[in-house]
Amino acid sequence: MDQQSTSLWRATTAASRFDSLHQKLHVDVAIIGAGITGLTAALLLAERGRTVAVLEQETVAGGETGNTTAHLTVAIDAGYNYIRRKYSVEEARLVADAQRSGLGKIVELVERYAIDCHFRRVPGYSYTEKRKYVSELKNEAAAAREAGLDAKWTEDVPLSFATRGAILWPDQAQFHPGEYVSALATHAATAGVKIFEHTHVTKIEDGQPCALETADGVSVTARAVFMATNVPVHGFTYVHTLGAAYRSYAIAFRETGPHPDGLFWDTADPYHYARWQETDAGTFLIVGGEDHRVGEKDDTEEPFATLLAYAHEYFGSRPESHRWSGQIIEPHSGLPIIGGAGNLYISTGYSGQGMTFGTVGAMLVADLLTGLKNPWAEVFDPHRVRPHMTTREFMTENLHFPAHLIPDRLTTMDVEARAASDVTAGEGMIIKVDGKKIAAYRDGAGSLHCVSAVCTHLKCDVAWNGAEKTWDCPCHGSRFTPDGDVVNGPASEPLEKIEVETGG
Ligand SMILES: Cc1cc2nc3c(=O)[nH]c(=O)nc-3n(C[C@H](O)[C@H](O)[C@H](O)COP(=O)(O)OP(=O)(O)OC[C@H]3O[C@@H](n4cnc5c(N)ncnc54)[C@H](O)[C@@H]3O)c2cc1C
Ligand code: FES
Image 1 (cartoon, rainbow, N blue to C red):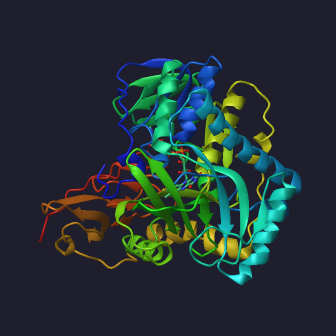
Image 2 (image 1 turned 135 degrees about the vertical axis):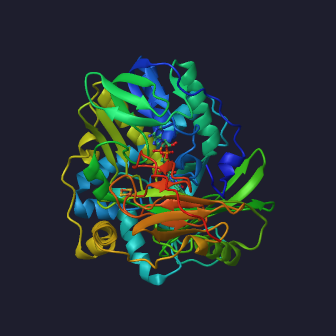
Image 3 (image 1 turned 90 degrees about the vertical axis):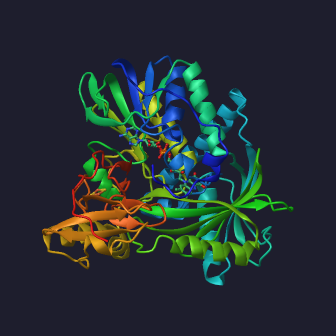
């Protein structure tokens, strides 16, 4: 993958080595995706005696699990106050129970398999620097308590700059996600799970059995398929309209001095998050934030620059070691979407709590697949009626779908037409050739890589992401390399390659 940035986790985890799939295979459950969701589900299903295969197009933790910042918390982005208001107190309790159980399951697996992943219990702080957010945070603490969680107001926030107070979430946790997920893969394989890396699933058919095909033309049959792919990569089209893909940015700095213990989130818009992590390579401060909708920033280097300036201002200057960005799926309804239709299952829409919600998704789908009753099934059901959005929510979120779909696809050019010769080295641009929009990237050696600008998912136009050197689709977050290969779904087909007369 032509990716500029590397996360701290990828840089400090030994590479996994599972073969790609060469022979046809039949299993009880085929899991697509070897992130925290897929590998947790694989382990849980193998523990229950199911035959399982995990098919991963990249490597273990090669998706967003490798891009996380791994705050392990029961707090949720949407807020328990929102859930009790828009749904009910009872449902807020179920969500709280799911989050507490997700965190509990991580602790249980760390202990049961003696996973050495620098796991540590730490407090979490949702803090604010602005007086106007104090009552909102106090309401959230009250709603979390009503939902059965331990959350209290504190003015004692262990940061070096002044705050107006925080929700204190005791007994949250942190770990090295690369080490944790690698260990899940090792233990799942020991329990009989067949894991295949560099195995891209290109075709999924529901049935008895379900039929899958890989890019190498190998077929897999399974009684059920779990798409643990961050977003569904087959069917469930309506699910893409229930959420939006955001990019979030993170920078790690070497830490040599003393530092506070805890997970920290502020109330800025876009918000920031920070924590420290010990690793075998030393201790690091990790600062993240500057989220924006995928494909909506012309200059994707700018969020890194803004985040760096923020980190220097608030935490002081330290040597930067790693920077990376990744994809977060924000559900409009505030709740993840987990469940199945026919023999196909999905788990998506975790917001910034994919470590815990990913574990919840694995637990819930494992229960659904083994006929166990699970109290969270209805709350997260993909088919449930979700609350109507407010006009503001609709304006800021849902309208992005038609706004990108209709003008881009049904009118003529809405971007400045450029010629191939305008594309400079290291840059990507949409150019127009014979009336067709082409996504053109010129590499460092001067060669032009041209692909269709039309996303293969539902035909929106892609936009250039200069920081990651990818083509990103603003509609549902698919991303492609400069040569058109899929980096992130829901798209499963590459962008069409196009021959263009080169210039410049
Ligand atoms: C910058 C950032 C910070 C974050 N911080 C936090 C945090 O502090 N706390 C927290 O809880 N969460 C956080 N998250 C969210 C969390 O990282 C994700 O929600 C979570 O990792 C998703 O895990 P997953 O296993 O569902 O998906 P992924 O890890 O993305 O795994 C899906 C896998 O499916 C594979 N795949 C997709 N399509 C196919 C196909 N067709 N064939 C084969 N394989 C396929 C992909 O290659 C990928 O490896 C953060 C995310 C980002 C980007
Ligand atoms: S991701 Fe859906 S149209 Fe591109």
